[in-house]
Amino acid sequence: MEKKDMNWSELGFGYIKTDMRYVCNYKDGAWDEGGLTDKATIEMSECACVLQYAQTCFEGLKAYTTADGSIVCFRPDLNAARMADSCRQMKMPVLPEEKFLEAVRQTVTANAAWVPPYGSGATLYLRPFMFGIDSVIGVKPANEYQFRLFATPVGPYFKGGVRPLTLRISDLDRAAPRGTGHIKAGLNYAMSLYNIVDAHEQGYDENVYVDAATRTFIEETGGANIIFVTPEGKLVVPKSDTILPSITRRSLVQVAKDYLGIEVEERPVALSELSSFAECGLCGTAAVISPVGKIVDHGKEVEFAGMGPVIRKLYDTLTGMQMGSIEAPEGWIFKIC
Image (cartoon, rainbow, N blue to C red; front, side):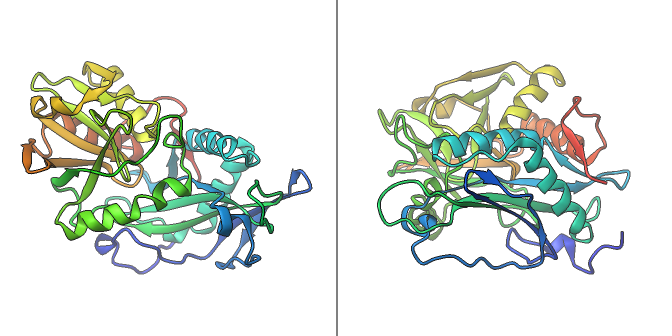
């Protein structure tokens, strides 16, 4: 497959329209067959539920060109399962896992020329999403839904690639106890837009959110989970019911335990512990792992090693599995072609 003529190494994390996308509609209690379309626009009523009451959820995953030239995705079954959890919480119909995986397969295959070459540093980002599409004026769930999946080639999530980030402790809350912080609902991200723009204007790369109930425990950032490493090399992962269950984070925990022999603690992490850690990183589909150089807590600066030895080892091992240079656990790699 001949690739598109692009400067892959210069790509940022933005939308580029590709050739095809997948669409499937839910009506009268059932999903239709679904299929590919070249139409990148959506037509709906001005009173569509998604526009009135933000009834929408989404996922994010990537397609990679591996060392042997294959095109693969990384653990898309977990994306399907997480989207199902989001749909249940949002009172939306669940798209069957096999239909989700078929949508991934068809979309990537149809856009194979857009999958960046091996070694370019770029990937094909996939965005599955679902929303209530019929007219709703009273506060209630929609009756009809549309699932879509589009693809776009992307570079690093943070500008400048893999570099130490500067974060701040946020004064605003990301998620409420017993709320929707544990699912990928669009409304979770809408409430963070003011805060991320403000962070950028103040010279920070991201916000670190703490728990809304006591404001004493680290949760995550606006777009990624956060991990820490002790001076002894132990991986510490914040645990909370309002943290999104990142697929990348869960994979890193398994890689650390089973492949690298790194001790792992998954537990609540107090804000007061920040200065006791040697390394810190943000992890997620878009960023994989981005090293953190500094967290600022209302004027108090806590510095970390950036891409320290443990963060580097985790990054190299996981990306090696995704790109095919390191053998991944069974079932982690979904081969497209």
